[in-house]
Amino acid sequence: MTRKENPLEELEKAYRAALDEAARQLSYRDLSAQTLREKLVKKGHSEDAADYAIAYLQARRLLDDSRFADTAVRSYERRGYGEHRIRQELHRRGVSREDADAALEDFSPDPDTLRALLDKKLKGDASDPKAVQRAVAFLQRRGFSWGDIRQALKDYGTVIDES
Image (tube, rainbow, N blue to C red; front, side):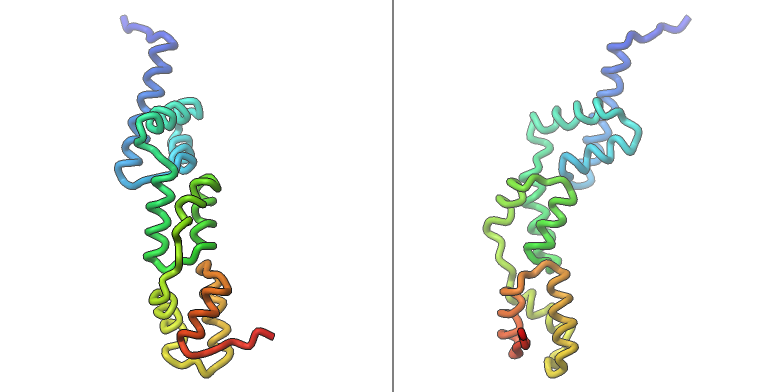
């Protein structure tokens, strides 16, 4: 005769399973709380179990959106993205505005990165205005501000007609 589990044991088992899956997900890479919650629910865990796992991990500082934001900013910066695009990615991943602001507080685009991106698009020839416009649009899509782009173009030896 099999022993029938009581509802509390079943609930504890579900919470433990969600916590185990959350730990497994975090072992691969750092995640925001929102992203982790979405992954847990997608894998079939109840919303309550996902919330329990997140609260448990946050209480032990194993899940921290501000740490995730700092790591993400460095990663996107290395890949050549500007502040606007990084902020957009943090928002998409569920990082609060306060955590994003704190992570981006000291952000300043690297002039060498901007130059390398311009080189990639212009191939050393800034004489074609349409090519320059395409390079500007490329940098804007990567999240760089107009001020940063204008300075990069000036450093590159070209100016853009702003009329």
